[in-house]
Length: 327
Image (cartoon, rainbow, N blue to C red; front, side, top):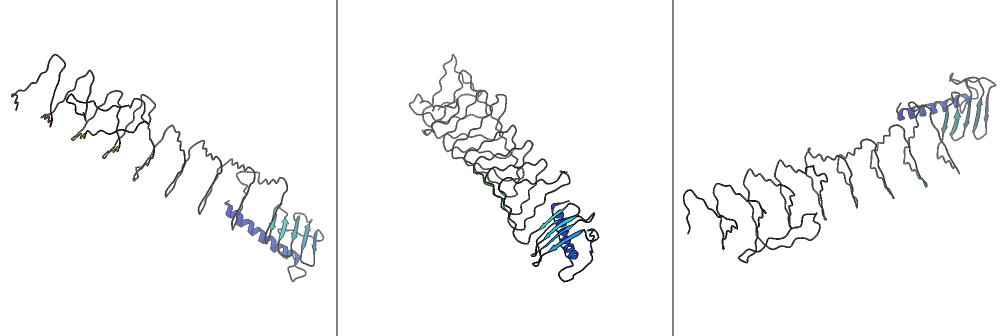
């Protein structure tokens, strides 16, 4: 039975109890009226009723199968202990309970059937000056029709032994001074569409700690990298670049100082050296003790200044099937 149904049943029972009290007492005008509720047995002289001039009523029924105790206030408040072992209390105005020490309320014996129902028409306030512990052996459900605000003055811990889900139909905001996410597996799914934007006013480092792992970036569309400062690449092993379309590298050759610090280990870089003509080198390729091979349809090299090719080995060879032209 839902808590609303149980509450409605309780209200109906209380209304019936009030009606039966008036019937058993003869009502406000009648002096003698038979009991019209056969479920509540009353036998003379086993039912004791005491009434005051103000209208207060105290009733004790000793009839077999009808044992009950009732206390009725002239203003309508009453306390009823009926023959089935139920207790009903009705208060027309405020109810105040003050307990100097402990207060224990134990409800029910069967966790599958017994219930506690509290319905508040107005606001509800719970103030605890000490600690508060809540333990639920079963499930817990909260449904809030308006806003929900939770404030914690100290440390807050949310722990789930299994899964945890947070769903927001609108916008979800997380604001913190320091954010740490420790996970074994992490998936960010934006397949429904939209953009992902990160604004960082400090450094950002992505580390793949396992040497046999792979760090991959795959884009079905374009990919752009726009570095207003310096751009470093450090490849510990091989580097392969496949371009299906065209490739263009434009180097202006200006002397620009990079931002010091913040570089991972092995990312230190030095600018190109000066050429044998005394001019600065804007683009430098070094392959160490290995060779460099360029395979293309036509090859054109243009130098607006001087041009020099030097071979330190035993041979400098230029081969051409149709002749060599020098201007």
